[in-house]
Image (cartoon, rainbow, N blue to C red; front, side, top):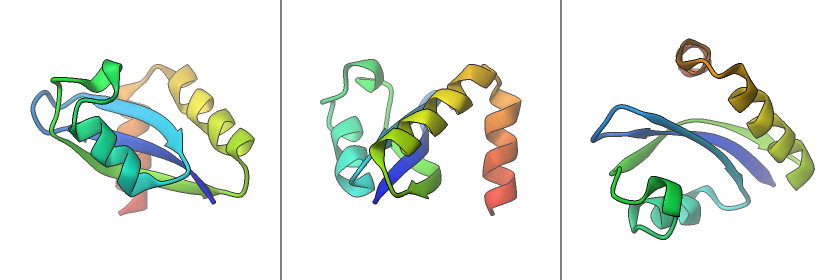
Length: 82
């Protein structure tokens, strides 16, 4: 199982979108400074995720979300999920 996820920085209020096979391990990597693009910008928390059968599907969804270039779109995903 693969996931597309959205993280929220508790420090800056910014979002990060990615995909992974293991959400828990990936969040740990973000929060422990192993991901260059999120280093020193956390702590991070998962605010949204979707499951996919393949890595390609999860990657495609990540790119779709990023292509919107819209915080409003991400906030809508999050609010519709809760």
